[in-house]
Each structure stands twice: as structure tokens, then as C-alpha cells.
Image 1 (cartoon, rainbow over the protein chains, first blue to last red):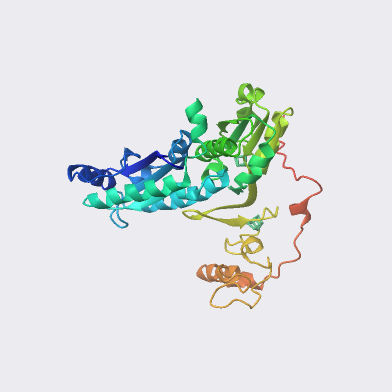
Image 2: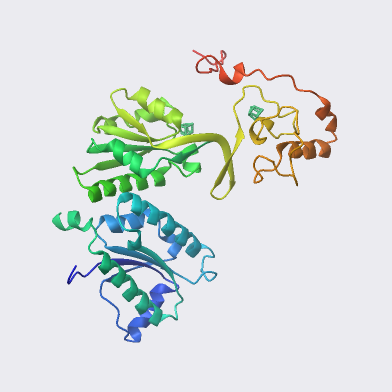
Length: 141
Length: 223
Ligand code: SF4
Ligand code: SF4
């Protein structure tokens, strides 16, 4: 869709992705304004319900960003988050949404550039899919 | 505990097509422990059903998540009366017992099972549940060192082993240890190998199958 600007909710772990986004800011790296960051204490905090809620409220895409595998501050939060994302991608398919609207990324707090890259990558992918069919109900309400 | 697994979302969505306001009723006991119908799963399924309806179109759906301590007791179900009066149908996330109790407690309510009830067993690792008892009605674990051959031997042999095990694994399903080897190890550890010489007579399956539903009565507490 031409001129479509998606809304992407990014659940970012305090110890890595959130700091990386901060760094991207200080480095004045540009990344799309479609990304709405929600800081979480660990990617493992992001429960299925939270992700479904973001879609219910009209998000076109959701990304969960946690520490590099093996580096989770709480040991296994990011591994659990990845499994949950996998599970939810199947559930999204059953609901009738494209599973590509949801993605998991791993990065460290030093990876400001990577954060900007992820933001662009996700925005392009979701823009290609077009608006979420759930957006309609939200805008009308 | 009883172990169950969720039915596919598409099945439930189809069953619910005619309705606009439903309840999803979870059970905080066995079904919470096997992660099939506790509070979380009940809320998640309600969300998913609403979203499915919004994506597929048609009249909007309101799915109200409710959970009770145990769906197999009327005292707990009574607490749902007010809310259930307002819905057109319900999905039960209890085991097969829970579904039927819900039906009996609320005869006016159309109830759909949200789970497939699988087995009586327990968690053996995070995310894994295994069967331990077939509810045979006459436990013989004292003869087998506390390992149930009816359940854990693929052939359900009362007089084993069959001789087909290899490297301690069952020839029917190599993922499963040979139950009779486990039995032998246990008996040997306690110096009770002689129990293996005992030939078990045919089992009385009437105790397991019954004539119609089996029933337990405790006269000393019955009113
Ligand atoms: S309804 Fe079924 S799952 Fe719930 S407590 Fe009773 S037996 Fe367990
Ligand atoms: S012997 Fe019967 S009651 Fe005992 S564990 Fe096996 S199936 Fe259950």
C-alpha cells in the first residue's frame, strides 16, 4: 500500500535492546518512527497476552528484542521469549494474521547500529504486508 | 493429575461462529498445571478467539475469561452463575469431567470442550507430561516395585518382560524405557526379585471398565 506507515511495537529488554536504542539515539542514527518502544525488565517478561494485546490495539507488527543468547541477565529469559514468539507465530496464523508480523531479535547494549537496522528491516517487512486487518476496528472505535 | 491438550483454535472458532457473547471457563487445578486451562490459558484463548473473529469478519465476539478452583465441583461452579446467565455459549477448559459438570450445573448453557483430555500422569520435565496410571481399579504396584506395567509397558504385560527390549528400551517405542526392566531393577534393589516368580492371574477388567460409569461410595461420610 502506497504511503502506508506501519505501527510496530518493540518490546525491548532493559539490559540490551533498550540501551541499544538509546545508543542509536546518541549516535544520531536514523531509524523509522514507526517503532514504538516499550521497555521491559527482560524479554522473558513479554507474555503471550501482552503481544496479543498489542495486535488487538491495532499494532501492524510486534518485535521482541532480548540479549544475545547466553547473555540474558536472568539466564534464560531470552530463550523463553524466543519459544513463546515461535508459538505465537503459529497462533497468529490460526487467527488469520501473517506470522511475519511478529519477530524476535537478539542484540547487545553496544549494538546501536544493529538496532537501527532491525527497526528498518522490520518496518520494511511489515510495510510490505500492509496494515493489520485488526487496525480497522481500533480506528473506528 | 489429569492431563489435557488444547483443541485447535480453528475448531473452536468454527463451533462458536453462531455466537456473539461467550465465556471461556478455565480450571485452576490439573488444567493449570498442565498449562492447558489455567488462568493464563483461559485469558489467552479468549483474546485469540476475539481476534480471530475480528480478522475473519462477521458479528463481533465478546469472550469472557472465567476460572474456577475446580470445575468438577458444583460449589465452585455456582460462583459463575451470574456471569454465565448473560452468555450464549461457553468453552470449557476443564478436563472431560469439568465440561460435564459445567453442563449439569448450567443445563441451559451450550458448552463446547476446549481440550482433549489425554491421560492421568504428571510432569516429568518442563513442558513434558507422561502417563502413569490407567485407573485399573485394583492397584498392583506393591508387586512391581512401584512401576505400573499396565501403563508404562507398551504391551501392558502383567507377566513380563516380553524379551524384546534392547539396551533397556522398549521395542515398541525406543523413547520409552522398558517398564519390566525398571521393575526388575527396583525389585533387585530391595531384594525382592522373587516377586517376579509370582504369575499374575488374568486381571479383572470389570473393575476398570465397569457397567456404565464406575462409582465410589464412602458410606461413612455419605448423607
Ligand atoms: S475439572 Fe478436571 S481438571 Fe479441573 S480439577 Fe477437576 S479433574 Fe482436575
Ligand atoms: S496398577 Fe492400576 S491403579 Fe496401579 S498404577 Fe497401574 S493402572 Fe494405576
